[in-house]
Length: 137
Ligand code: SF4
Ligand code: SF4
Image 1 (cartoon, helix red, strand yellow):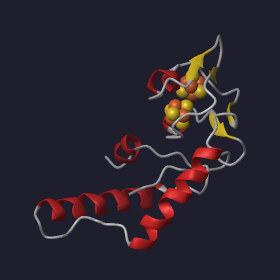
Image 2 (image 1 turned 135 degrees about the vertical axis):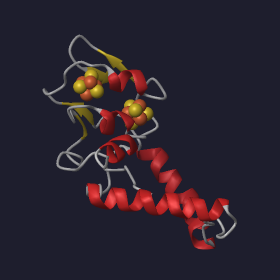
Image 3 (image 1 turned 30 degrees about the horizontal axis):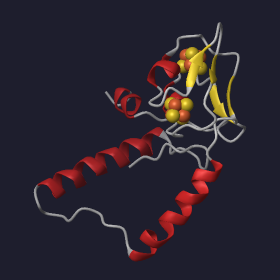
């Protein structure tokens, strides 16, 4: 699948995004037909996952989120946040909870790429499933 966690790494280019999604659709089809077993993580991954999650719990915070001046006050980010971590101000949104789910829906769905997480996402692509397929039609 295409990962959207641009806080830690680059988002693949559109061509690669499409390739990955088409591959995922084919694999899912094979699994549903019983031709392939679903992915199951190995013992090493299962062992380190709780430790990674522990670190993630300590570090996830909304404080690095920021909104630049290209914000058009559309409110999409606030409306779609799954945990209501944001509120709309007079001009821009702000984060009202110290922690959120870090899903990055707000960042990737902003129509003008106004949201960033510190400096780490500044020059990184955005990704949404919908826009990936819209651009391919
Ligand atoms: S989605 Fe983007 S443009 Fe719309 S209010 Fe949020 S930050 Fe501003
Ligand atoms: S990253 Fe997700 S949970 Fe956090 S504020 Fe944005 S939409 Fe809400």
